[in-house]
Image (cartoon, rainbow, N blue to C red):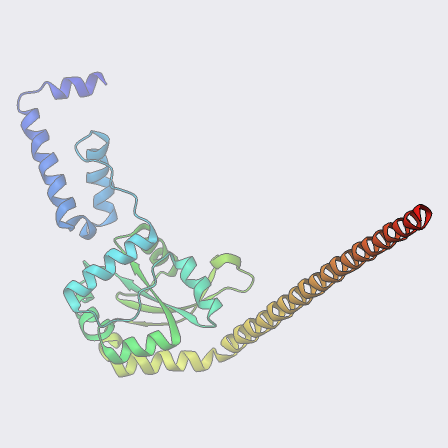
Amino acid sequence: LDFLSYVGGLPGFSHLRLLFVGLGRLLQRTGLLSLVLPVADLLLLTPLRLLGFLAPPPRESAAEAAARFTAEFEELHGETHPRFFRGSCSEALSRARREAKFCLVYLHSAAHPAAASTCDELIANALFAAFVDENFVFWVADDATADGRAVRQALRPRELPTLVVLAQAEGAGRGRGAQALAQVAGVRLRDVDGTVAALSETLQTWAPLLEEAREELTARAVDRAIIQEQASEYERALAEDQAREEAEVAAAAAAEEAERAAAEAAEAAEAEAAGA
């Protein structure tokens, strides 16, 4: 604290502080922070935040990050693209398993020289988009997000940009754990037909996994249908029992009322006979 007070009192420090504050705001507003490498963030921006020159960046959810990436992509490359999954990688894996599909991960770094051409020539290609939407859940591992950097570090691709086919690992509940089945990377991504062919070959190679997932989904659907049918039968039986009990109560009440009316009629007749 004494050191900061001393530094703050140095001549020209206030001007320097204003310069850093203005620079930090400019970087945040223009989105250039997404291009700064993690090392630069660690060596430059983190000390500036600790000194109070930069406000801490707002925490962005996986869905918000996907929505931001979608908006930026469509602004630069158009609205033709696969459906970008709005959630985390683990959520995308879970969705893929529920739909008996694989998860196709696109490792993206805006700072990479081939990123723009890959987006223009492949991701924004109508044939590629239709093929991916039919066969995969598509998730973008954007280097500008913590989740994207973590997935890239876990997959350790040989080069960027890269497409990786992922399947949820056996026994990995709730999306935890994934198995990389294939990669298409680098210059190969410039050939749309070749990329689609490579992904199709992966689907054929790992078809037993998908068939197993479909059988599991079918079995679960059958189990749910049986449970629902049993619940419906129980509710019907319960309703029938309740209706029968209500009918018996009503019949008993009617019989009791008839018996009481008959007794009153008999007493009235006796009284009339006695008076005569």
